[in-house]
Image 1 (cartoon, helix red, strand yellow):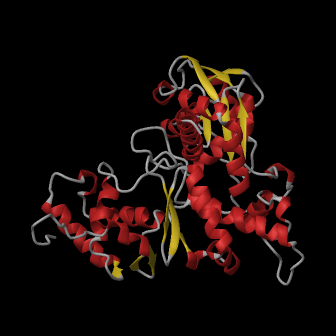
Image 2 (cartoon, helix red, strand yellow):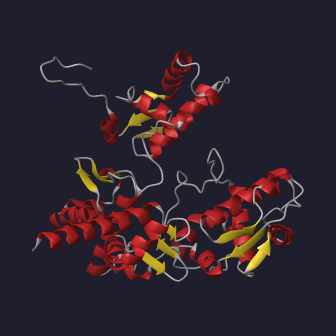
Image 3 (tube, helix red, strand yellow):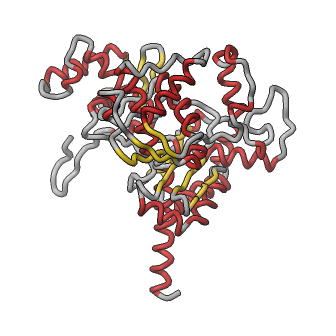
Length: 413
């Protein structure tokens, strides 16, 4: 092969890997928000689509004329550590009220190609007024208007609605604000990533809280796996093909979504599959094609993205106070430690650095900061909390302080 052909092959492989990791970081890519990434996905759509289909069983939908690419990530589980976040400073997570308003807003937007913020708010108010479960939207309340604006800002970030005139934030200060929107109804429909529509279940509303986990499994059930994904007790009528397909997809879905996959967290079938010669070969091939660095340890495996494209959150972080604290606390987590001990450590940190972490300077500041830091450590698979005791996990060793060795000098800490 000529040098030019080699260079072209390397460039193609690099583009495919960047497209795979890019769409993992942003499962909804729009031409308006990310034109370069969208063009890359459009140019290399087939190998990118095949990668997701083979390893994860996820569908990549590309609509060049409508200007979006959507990775449909089906997951039969909830993860409270990854909430939808507000598009304002602080990036606070959505609360229950905002999730409810989001669903009603989308339902109302599907009926119109163009609307104003006032008309939409009135339609949502009328819809919630006749609903037996959802409280009525009170546009006279600034708190309610702020929640409404957070929902609209989220949909703007998805390019599901576009501001033609005015500013959405103006509605927070006045319900008389004038804002005109153009609605992308096709993109709104693509936001839901479930094989089965929730509205097809016809479950009495009073039963939903008690049957939530069951209903979640129902709307995310994928027929191609048969009962492999959720076999009833004593049921074994699953073909080897379906079983292998489910094992492969379930493992790689976790690898690309979770910071680290511990063997102890896998089912016996998943553990046997991923540690088999075939499983290890697939791990290496998928990592190479996706541009990941594969780290294999006795306790588990992880995909590392050296460019940080495949995620929207990072650790460590030299800006986020909770992540900085989490990194500092890792130095003390060489063995199981109580939360009270970590609070004392954090109190000393706050005392030693009086100009830092100003949001945590009240009486319960150290406790809140430890809670936030532990949430980060838990989310990144670095620690677990049980019964008031924090236990470090093997991946925490990646951030351990190492001795510095320099040529011709003694080892320094």
